[in-house]
Amino acid sequence: MRGAERAGARVVARGGAGPLPQVAVGMRRELERREGRRMVSRHSLRRRGLPGPSARDPPRPGAVCDWPLEPRRGRPFRPRLTMERPRFPTAEELVALSRKYETIAGLRRARQAGGAVAARSELRALAREFPGALRELDTVALTEVDRRRTALLAASQGGPIEAWMTWMVAYHATMRAALLVKARIARVDALSAEEVTTAARDASRVSGLPLDDAFVLAVARPPAGRLNAAVFGVLGQRFGVAPERIWEELFPARRAGRY
Image 1 (tube, rainbow, N blue to C red):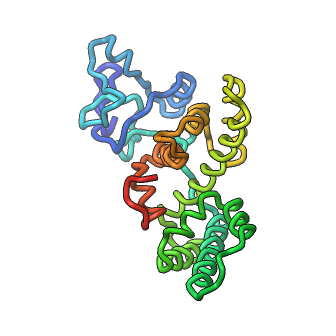
Image 2 (image 1 turned 135 degrees about the vertical axis):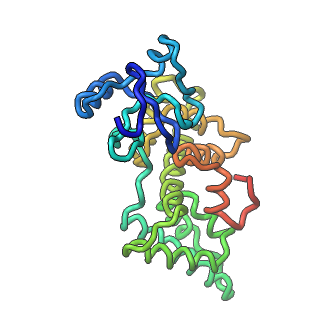
Image 3 (image 1 turned 90 degrees about the vertical axis):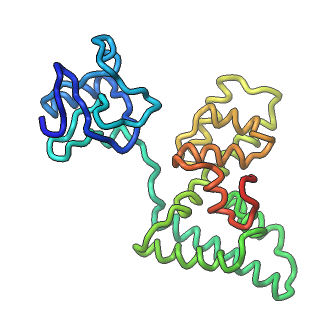
C-alpha cells in the first residue's frame, strides 16, 4: 500500500491535517467494500498492544488512524457525507446583508446631517429582519459600514467571500433562534425536558442551523447573563474559531473580549 505501512491489519499514516474521527460500523463496512482494504478501530489496536492515538491529539507521522489511506495521495480518506461543514452564504443572503448596510449607512448619514433619530418602527423592522443589527448601527464606523456593503455586493456577483460574511449570516440566524427561545422561556417558570427539545427543534427551524438542547439551556442561563455570550459560544463551536475573534471581526468598534 503506497503511503502506508501494514503490520497485520495496522494502517500507519504518514501525516494528517487534523483530528481523525471514529467511523460508524456501517460506514466502516461500506468504506472497506469500496476501498478493498480493511479498517481497524483504535480499540482493537489497543487490545492487541498496538499504539492508538488519543481523540484529543492531532495525528502525528507514524500515528495509527482509523481511516484507510488514499492510494495516490497517501492521506487519510474522509467521506464528505460524514463531515458537516458550515456552508457559504448564498448570493441572496449576501445581497440581503448589503441592503442591511445600505440602511444602516442611510440612518447614520441622516443623523450626522442633523436629522431626527430614526423612527422606532424603522429600527424595529431592521432588527426583525437582522437580529442584532442595531448594535452595528450604534458602534460600527461608517467607513466600515460602506466597506462591508461594497464587499458584499462584489461577493454576491462572484467575488471573494470573506470569513466575516459567513459569520454574520450565522450570527443573525443564531440570534433569531436565541430570541425565540428567550421569549418562550419567559412564559414558563421551568422548562421540562420535552419543552427544551421542542424549543431546540423550533430554534433550528427558524434559523436553519443545527441547534440542540444545550443551546436552549445556554440561552436560558447565558454566561454572565449576556445573551450574546451564548450566541457567540455557538458560533465559536460551529466555525472552530475563538468567540472573541468572531466578535472583534463583526463588531470592531467594541472593546475586545466583551459581548
